[in-house]
Image 1: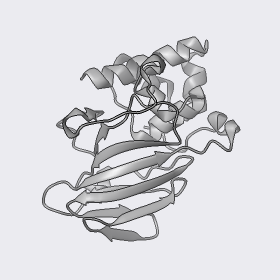
Image 2 (image 1 turned 135 degrees about the vertical axis):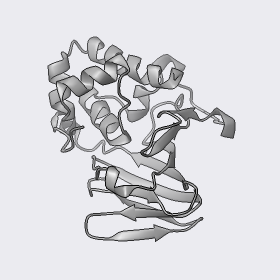
Image 3 (image 1 turned 120 degrees about the vertical axis):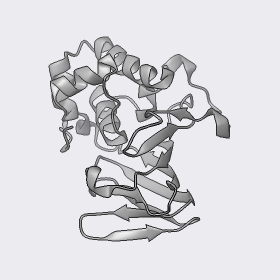
Length: 199
């Protein structure tokens, strides 16, 4: 997909602009060198959590992984049919669509989420910052290691993204969930903290 290629190109481009080797970026983002190489070659699409770790390691806002800086605008409108797929249409796990990818530097990054029904196949994720999810359609379950929360259409949840978490669909059709990821900009050293999850 064109948007996946954009993600790949941005990771490689940003790494090279910073004169960083694959080894250095992989270590700072908490992923393996081989997995990072797959991302750059288009053989793997990073999850939102891994993307957040890469953004921290590269010292750029999360949305900069998905759009060139010169394309960023002060006001961005994303029509319903213009959301950019960030995962393959046949992705068995959670599917993501990007929104407002061309927006300028911001404190949150929005995504449309279509969680998988199979929670067991989805690993828990955590990253610096906070998350807000709003169930637009269907029924979803927000899962933490110690508890689960069922969310109906119109329900929402706000939580620290440092808590390991994942979301699954409970309704027959995949739920449609608005996800807002807020980056933790108060700890610049977080860019050098390895992410606890490797692929």
